[in-house]
Length: 500
Image (cartoon, rainbow, N blue to C red; front, side, top):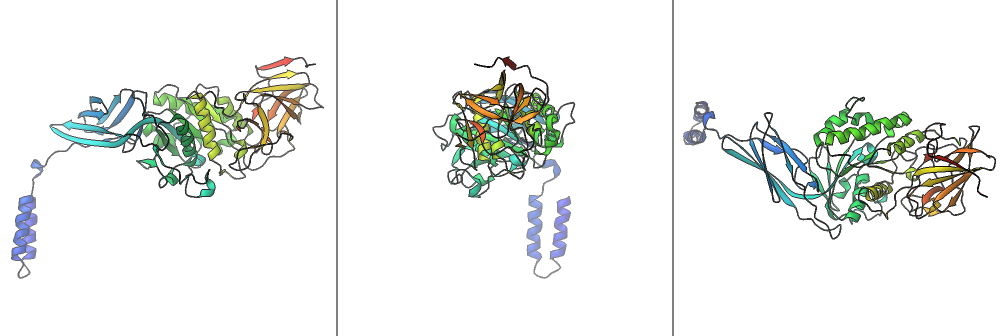
């Protein structure tokens, strides 16, 4: 026997020193007693959940819920969660999948409530041998998939000057707000101690969301600084990207309520060609998840660098990629947060509070049916009225205002200030800076030297800032061009006689 040979060597070596015979004999006998041949070793069943089915997970409420993992080929798999017991047999490659019946989430009395967690237990059995794996403190709620590049990846950290309000960390006792980041393989429960590890945009989004819906909220964050959208795509005519393969595909099928997307900085030179890529990302992910047309809301890029006052036609810098986001809203169940007023000279605007809040307002209104909550107003139609053009928007029941925003503070109304970055196009194709007159929830645009206007553009430039247009709920009006990317007149143009 191999173990006997090993013990004999111990005996030989130790007895070369006087007085060690007894110790050597004890080692020899102990080795013999504990020795086992390969034929008598107890078999085990290798098994496990796939991430992110781990402790403290939030799983999606109100949908048939897939749970999966790996084990030995053709092992019996029994999953128990709450009052459900489901049984299946692993495939020949060891993979298994069980779908739990739809279950409701526990409602919270406040964002500081601790939800009641349950243990999800899976048992594997093969050849009479059983093994068990548990995921503890699992909670039902709404899960949002948060993806993009550095402005989504950036952490909350402990720098108070980057938080709003400044006591954000001290008050971050949110037991029902949890984050899973790809690569971490664990769920973080939000507390003053763990909050610095949350991603800023996703944290502010989830915090506001939970404040209104009062249920557990999970955020799954997968973002890579500097990545382009191409790396996240998964369907023709685009090749499948590396970030999709490594960071998204392993999570496909994990129940989600929807997704938020903050990316485009690395694709700004695509301009209008970003639109088909963003549409492909949305439709491709929806197809992969096989969970219907789940909501996807995205951040329209903020301003960067500076813009010239010598070009009323605009179209420079990020103008067309912002128009690409707007055009993508034609897809079902999409929404957009406008951020032109919180940009900076550099690529990483410090204000992610308003970014997350505006994403949340868009989602709350469109997904959770908070109809009285306004989101960022967007252009809907316009009518040519003689020498002026009347422009209409959604989300303007409260009316419009001119205001200026600084930092995290709400925009300050500027009732006597002109609207900046507003231009009108004459019949001969020339563009001119224009005056804007607020008429309730509409904007009337004109220029005294333009008698036959045909189009309007607003904030259609790299970095529009200053006195901008908002609704009276402090939400910025999105940049718009009534002729889209080019000179053609859109179908929603009306021509009306001049009002007398």
